[in-house]
Length: 421
Image 1 (cartoon, helix red, strand yellow):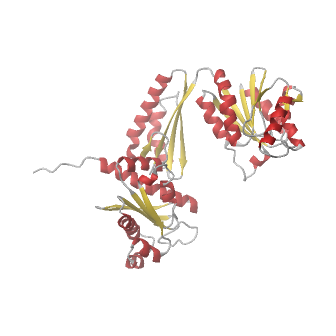
Image 2 (cartoon, rainbow, N blue to C red):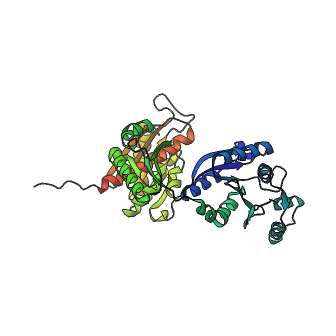
Image 3 (cartoon, rainbow, N blue to C red):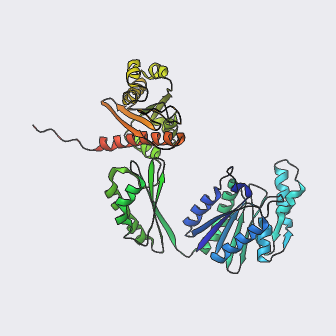
């Protein structure tokens, strides 16, 4: 079965609002074995809404919409669908009673306009809304199913799980979507594709998508199938071939973030980490502490922007800053080693650079970043030059730092050659 999603609301056509409901609905439908073939964002114009639903119903068997079920004049989803299907709208006493009870429960007086939310197209099944006043609607016509859900995400998600999921599951034809997501660090999109294209192009029944994101490349493998074991075997074969081809550049085959991978390595090795950041402004520490349980491995960090505090807080020798400059390999190493010594962490990480858009020089242009890690036996430093704007440079610097930590444990896990006497 194929489906389309319609996101309703003129606010979604401005830069102030992002449609996140479609992401949730796509994931849930894919999980139920339903392929989403199109997503449409439509404003609050009655004619545009009617046309959007009409065209979608001509293409697919299932149409799910979010938004436009509120009490105001610009909430027109009910009217558009009722007009398209030739259904009359009538006030449903049971829905009206639930809306009134909802207002009593929260101690507010109901406005008369809220009665619009009790208008139901004839033949529609009402989907109860336990978190708001706008009920959802399930309609069937000419072999098509139209589901209307409220716009607020917390209402939509709860309604889908309680009222819609089991209904849609009955429509599924037994086809399942199986997926793998590999993430790659330290390589460009074109380089990744050039190396792995001979692998994935041999399998026409698997959809392969290569996406670029700051600091990483994502390889998505998707297969729609009625034979899950056979499809899993093919996906596993492709995955193993890609890992063999790209080597340690693949940092996960499970779609994890870099900080999740690093958290697992730190935990597995019972290691601790501390950070000293300049141009990233604490972003590395923030990413490390996103993970629940991070207190087991993250000891702390400092944001030492000024040269004075680099010396005062992390013991960076002033003469190194004077002779080599704050943005230098030597300062990055001193930051990493200084924070390690100060905190007693297994690993210290230091970052310094020019995030821009000002501050660059011919010798050290905007995007120049030095990242270092240090343990008790020494340090390792990497200099990179990132293109892009300030936020992108800062993110990529934090990604490089995390990747250095990940690779540190890869090398630490390798057996050392035995001495021969």
